Image 1 (cartoon, rainbow, N blue to C red):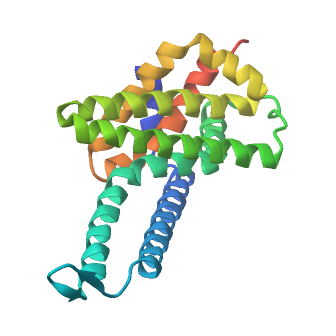
Image 2 (tube, one colour):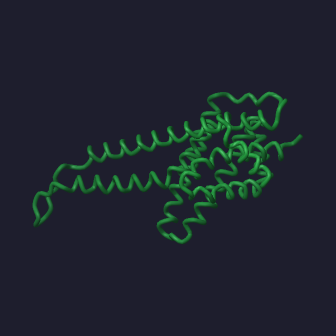
Length: 228
């Protein structure tokens, strides 16, 4: 595992890695901005301009107050979800990173397993939805038990990065069933590898590179663990 981390780090300057990083960040920012815009537009439609309160009369600043509160909530969610969403988005560009690793370290490989475009998109969407849903669920733990938040964050995202990235990489060579079977056989190893990558997710800027590094590491891991 450590050797594969080193090999992946050594390739981080690859232009194909940089291109995927830029694409993932732009798509993530655009997605979060769209969600923010839709949420604010919906509040504008739902909230009345004035509210009549008992003993006070008509109050005209409630909608503005709620809107500013919503801005704060959305900004906080954007910060918390930025990295998990970026990790999910990288799934759409995973093949380019894995192909770059294989071109440098594993020449003369047999042809890829013929995955249909619809299945590739469906798997990437499923992964992104899973990442977002699990991290939103973890927000409850962050609020209820703040001291546990760092541990929960690392373990949850370590599990997701390890299992999902490995399966997405392995499917290129083994197909869905073969990839899932191989991931089950190496469950703890993959969770450990994902956890090692999830720990730096709390470091600004570095956390945006981790999903790319993760795909590269698990491409190496696949070729180390795949049946010969």
